[in-house]
Image (tube, rainbow, N blue to C red):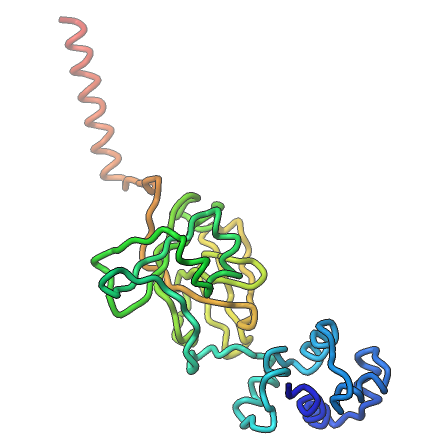
Length: 266
């Protein structure tokens, strides 16, 4: 583990003493010094403290040699952005294939959706899911189908399933794009996405139902993003007639009523 050397490097970047950092973190100086000198290994609670204080993911703190970081790497650290939003490193994506080695579309049933944030990359989780093909979709892209709950995204109603395309480079997402966003804290959410990566290191998520207020999710809290392609619904969307169609429908109804009255008289 690189934790001791990394802690010392991060502290020196802040130009703080061991005493100052220990005070900030409500630790004794001897405890903090022991971690830096690899005399003791921090427990999970201490790692979380260091991660929040230095704006560095626990994984990077423990596994990476920060002395090898370049200017761009440190820029991400200073912004508090741990996630590879450009997809320069291949995102881990487990997928099912058929006998011809062609990708299948995994359907996440509602009962399985609560565990998706933990099992999205686990073959044991995915291999028991229903799968299907949609022949009109591109074979060069990866798709998955997600369940929709609630009434925040009409005309897509509760009980529908959204088929969505995996997004490798989050920077490519345009404002106003409907997406399935898989978050660490809230699981699967379906929203209209506005890209705020350059300014706020995250995305604003909006509903098509104005009753629900927009909210922002930091990129560090996002596991996957899937761009909306189509949806499967148990209901037909509401059809609104324009004035001309409404007038025609009314005249047709009046005609039918008149014919019905004539039949009754005869």
